[in-house]
Image (cartoon, rainbow, N blue to C red; front, side, top):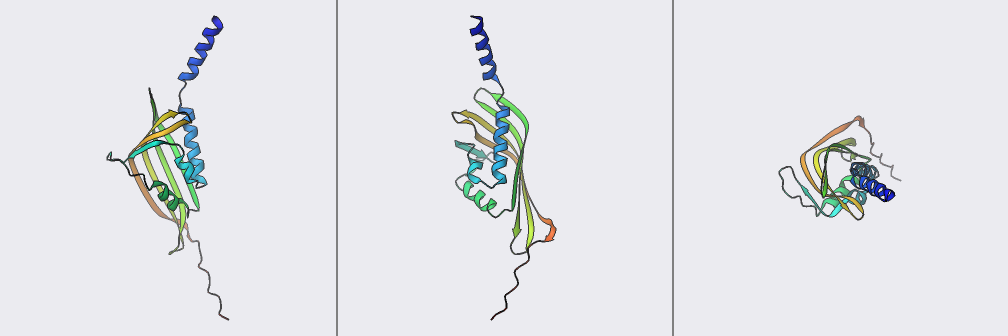
Length: 167
């Protein structure tokens, strides 16, 4: 009897443990996917019924989102995604993370032959739900977002090829 009570107590503790460490691991997976420009993995943590909302609470059309990321990241020389969880709240069926994300990518401007560094800084509330496959992002409410573009500090980094002498 005592053994059963102890087991029930321990199982209860395990069930009530915060999902935050596991969710932080999911954000780390997203960072790893961005680093290798693996777009499918960037979307793998979204629930099938995922929705996103702009700062003015308008639903974002996600139909072309995957293709946009492919076009954005394919030419990138370097890509980095960092996520900082600023606040965490758990409700009966959802875990809510207020996050600050920074997506940075570098690419060469083919016309100017200069390194261009772009950064998107986003403040958002991510709504995570527990599914059979683990935690998934069900919704994202973007609170603010800013894109910055700057030239790299290395000056001209790509030299156009010299024309070959004709024979």
